[in-house]
Image (spheres, rainbow, N blue to C red):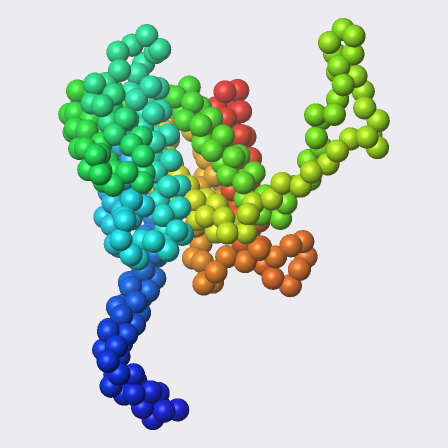
Length: 332
């Protein structure tokens, strides 16, 4: 077999177009190997479980670490690359988008809630400049270039972090601000679970057939007259949703793990520390190593797995834990 293979390459190389074909094949193989190497998600940043320094510094450090990892991981930021192998690396691009959405939410809450004592207080000027930088289109490759804008956002966050460590900036680690953040997280996770669940299709009842009565109110419709429809994620988009969920869980695990130390007093006072830790455990489960080369989409109790539903299970549990955490912070 080896001899025949070498002979085939020799025959191809002797043809007029042979060297070009062999060279193109080698380049393609190198691009595929390079693409596989840079598609691996980085490890989740780890932070101390106890606070060392001023309140808020570690949480902001996590935000900066998440942003820097997004840009400096293997292969750098590729969502806006216009050259191969980025053309076919949609999995890591969707992972990047999931991370970016959590980064945007974090910066918005940091600017509007956590850094301000009340609604009528002045916002931090550097945070006011940083938030828009992360809202640049993630696929923009020129005028402006996404990476350049995100770098500027990191620099502004770092400025806030330095002033925070020196006592010249504010970070209010109270229950109300944590609730505001968790409400955003709850909505993001709920939306993600819904999209993951659509991998097997969802039966919905169409209420468009409801007729209005004389007084304008909708009249009842007999069950046999109601219409049902099935909504399902297109087959080619299943892995896109899955890896966006992976990126979401990755960024949330890093941010919430770092914030645990800064909000420790509030969590202890509200007896919510265990519930907060439960959120982290579910996110850690969602970030377990993926030991498959493709995302399977088995239905029901079929022979093959459904990775989307497994991810939905972990994120759904995390969503429920966040909901319970919010209730404890409000009523605890």
